[in-house]
Image (cartoon, rainbow, N blue to C red; front, side, top):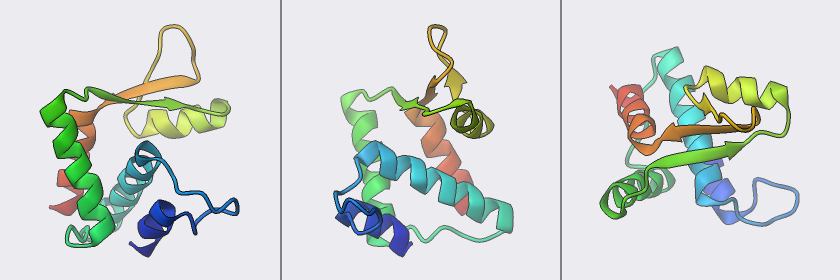
Length: 111
């Protein structure tokens, strides 16, 4: 998952700034889902993947409850809905998914 590492270092974008942890987690979840669809295992020993998984464990310890996504348009919002995110009652472009659900998806993708 060199892409996840590139996101963390800032080399994956034209601006050169590192992606936020939540962005990296979303991209890892998408990559995990992609691996699961193709019948491939997720390499949990990869440094970037291990770091995101450790972040999930830390969120569980300190009480992180959900990941919030601000979709840029309806097409992006549909992308996140297909991946299990729930639409906010106040704004159709704001979606949530519990950290526990994301962690379960990562675990299922590796099985």
